[in-house]
Length: 177
Image 1 (cartoon, rainbow, N blue to C red):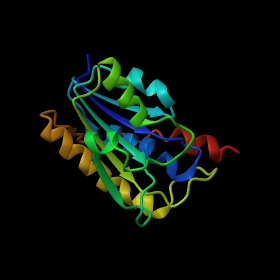
Image 2 (image 1 turned 90 degrees about the horizontal axis):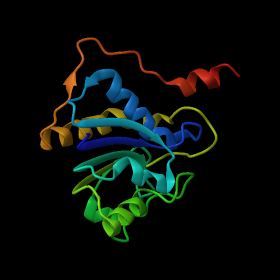
Image 3 (image 1 turned 120 degrees about the vertical axis):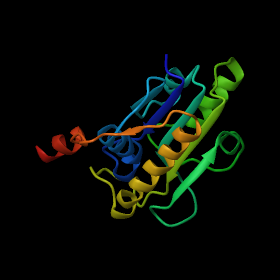
């Protein structure tokens, strides 16, 4: 059973909302993870997110966030930050979101003890495949934050000797149009 979840949230057909899935694909292609770590592109689960995070000891999430600042700026939020009124997570196709899932699990039991949201401020969330330049440039910084957190949690990722090809299936589907 997984103790630590690394989840990417977002809609791959909505521009910068795909930040989470892109981060997950980068992680999967470049690193191996120890058995207690689950790495998952969770898409746009809404309140079904609780199914993926119930019972985890720790949770790391990559997602686009609505916050003041320039597009591509990476923001880090801990569990306490998420459970209070601020920051305001962006309203999008996968609301209710992380905050609501955490509150549900806090109430019913099974919430992760530790949570880190690695967010990026989007440039645009529109029907489009692919990230804007500033958000694409933020992916390595987000990956680095996730790796740092896994190290802190005692579950370091191991770099692959030869990275795998990234399975960006949504770009292939869009290219067939």
